[in-house]
Image (spheres, helix red, strand yellow):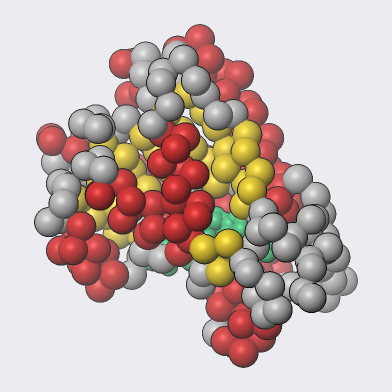
Length: 250
Ligand code: NDP
Ligand code: 8X3
């Protein structure tokens, strides 16, 4: 596929697995994240399979987002596919105990960061009347769970933004859809529990969680449908998971 995809949060988990699968399939890549050594490594390994450009910026930083996109070399300026994937949860506290810093981080990254990225790229898609945007939401954006409060709110916002984007960009022929995973074993819980790896591991104990590669596979399926097919909103859970709180750990 002779297309260029920009993936946010490409240094880990779902974004990284998607970058790897896209590279296998010859999709040109713009990889974004904050950890330079990981970007360097991806550029070097995936660069053997496809053209790769790496961008290091924090999606919370509006100016950094726009200057990163404006800094793209000529052969990477046309972005066909935007994967809005960067995001994380911070903490798992009741609403009375949650920290303001955690709330700011989740809303700034998961919601505002996604909007800044979209705003920096949508105009070129509108001008060309072509493009495909995939927003990575979550089952947390479909159902609120205990102590999930603000993370769930951020992903409900992604759900609303996904619908709004699809409606507003429909006239321009741009495809917009969301992939909403349940529990995927990545660095997500390491980040949520701020480096408490033992606590993070317990989230995925006793059942087979999804792997980042499972979601990458789905994202690749979504972007390889014929133009008249738009996967608008997809929810995927591990077989052991029935809802945010019902997980079969037998
Ligand atoms: P990871 O923690 O493994 O990856 C998160 C990615 O986001 C990293 O590449 C990180 O890169 C990037 N990122 C985080 N904060 C910022 C920031 N401020 N600026 C730029 N990049 C940032 O988690 P996942 O792969 O699991 O998560 C990816 C997406 O999937 C998220 O939106 C998450 O909410 C969603 N999701 C995850 C689920 C799960 O169970 N794991 C389930 C449902 C949805 P770096 O640190 O280098 O900046
Ligand atoms: C991540 C899935 O259930 O840990 O969005 O919130 S969950």
